[in-house]
Image (cartoon, rainbow, N blue to C red; front, side, top):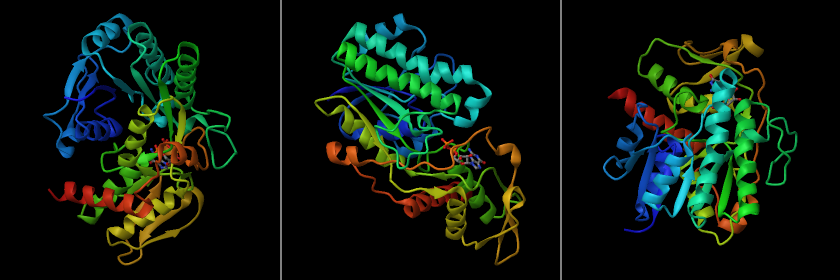
Amino acid sequence: MGRTAIITGISGQDGSYLAKLLLGKNYRVIGIRRPNAPTDLWRFSELGISQDVEMLDLNLQDKEKIISALQKVKPDEIYNLGDQSSVQASFYSPADAAQYSGFNALLLLEAVKETDRSIRFYQASSSEMFGASKISPQNEQTPFQPISPYGASKLTAHLGVSNFRNTYGLHASAGIMFNHESPMRSLEFVTRKITYTLANISCGAETVLSLGNIEARRDWGFAGDYVEAMWAMLQQDEPDDYVIATGNSYSVKSFTEKAADLLGFKLIWEGSAEKIHGYDKLSGRLLVNIDTALYRPIDPDETVGDFSKAFKKLNWEPRVGFDELIGLMVDADLKRVQI
Ligand code: GDP
């Protein structure tokens, strides 16, 4: 057996892809699970890794228990992917965001410092930390201006990483990840909501895709590419922070059009602003409407990341482009719907 890695947030999209990547590199992979919380491991089944990941029940708010677990497992690497995950949800429960996306990372870092400073640590930071910044594209030097509780909490953890790195010499790195999607994305995110709902409609479901701000533009990459960058960061001699992005942004509207196209629809828009509707030109059927309840209190208009540092130092670049990503998601959802 090779090295041992601990992954928090392992049941999510990134955790599952990262587990698969590390297992392929002969790691022992241990996933942290919240005690007494139901964990749905459907992604492990889809990725064929259900038998290979070890799960450990651990309360990430209990530092003494974390330290005991680290002493027992003796990990070489920790990937902290656990968080509240959704920007939208953070507006309803900012205190949960602070706990799960902020403080938990600090506790883990403290535990590493007190147990074994040679453990390498990866923190999942987020482009949401740039928030209101008008600078584009955004890189590691761009000042942070978070505008959501999620972004503010992620920034707490992000600054903690540089603090533990600079003050205590921990090998702690952070990936400032722009949006990354895949067939393993949960339905609360707009991309998967679009591909899943349109796949259902194409198979006869009597429903309409309700969206919020369709003019929002995001730099969307493929999660399978992004977990490779996480691993690469921990293989460097020196820890550091890296922007991981594609450098291109597209609107929610364009994503919807492309997904519809791949499913055999020809999406045309009528009306404007929140009165806009999307119809299938061929059948005249209503496919998309706007639900203003899905608008956020505040939402960055556009995000675009500059990944040139990751390219130069990690030799990392995104492989899956926008159209291919949507194709992967549409194909997977069509298969799921057709079962
Ligand atoms: P985020 O960028 O991490 O918040 O990822 P999301 O996939 O949740 O949202 C991406 C963008 O899509 C944001 O600008 C949302 O305002 C916009 N959006 C438009 N309609 C929807 C929707 O129905 N659900 C979600 N989650 N986002 C939507």
